[in-house]
Image 1 (cartoon, each protein chain N blue to C red):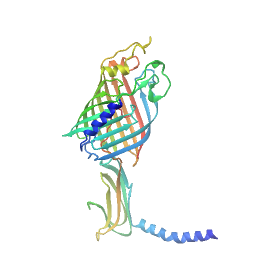
Image 2: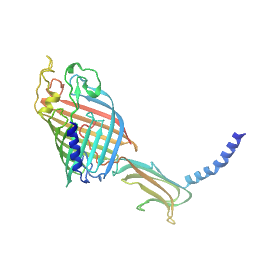
Image 3: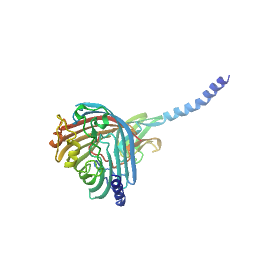
Image 4: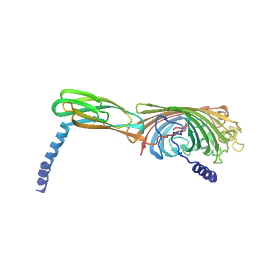
Length: 279
Length: 129
């Protein structure tokens, strides 16, 4: 794992060349992108309400969660860490080609949150009866290529990623259409995406091995799966340092995921409001 | 005794300062709010700003954009005035009050632009929160 990560970073360094255009998923291409080194970081907190797909979890889970974010750009490199995301949200990227509104990026990111018999590990250490006895599912880290086409304030992207952490050793393919709409001092972002997950990925997270099976939890061996994602997010600057955030995320899963004995439903929704202090 | 000296000195020194402040207020051009905050550097910022002015002497005055010199409004035989301005800019904007009889600038102010995020390559995956 360590050797693969080092190799990835070396590749990124060797491929470094200057780039001028925006190269991330959400991009307001009407803005002149930052040159050289630029960064933002901040901390915040938010209140969420969630209807999780994991069995045994409350249909309407709510609570407070912290938000730490870091966004760094250095020429072709970029790094984003956003703890307001459930998955942890670490993304490393490098823009290989950026011409005529087309972009090709090398990216490394976490796709799937880990969980164990306490549910999504974020929520605490109380064992959920319906999940008792399952093995821990780890966070993955996937590396691959992203092809994107930019329009004025929208962007369409296609990704092929492969796990390099040894977690599931499978692939993930993502397609995503995003749009940024500034209105007065507000920024509205919306996106819709379709993802495909390899047999290995689906089996690792949603399969049930013979050692995990019970009378109430049969062995489950899924195939390739899909998900459809919709999100909406709004930000408003309260003053020079404070930002108000709100958003909605919905995900729908194909039958190979939602028919798993540890999944209770074919969808997952989450809404959030919060504030963030940007240094 | 020492306390009395202090009070006396404070009053003596305070008076001229107060007079100076009064003079500044009398010949003032004030924008409220005087700052507009945009989410990202480079993006236009929007605010409704009250620009008020007042002068010692009644006269003919005009308010103009300090950069473009574009006249926004004039007042005839007035000592004070109010202009409600819709700020919509990606840069700070200065304003000047001029005496329209001689074209001299009698007061000036500025609406400053600030922003929260400086990094203009924001990347978000679909799990935003």
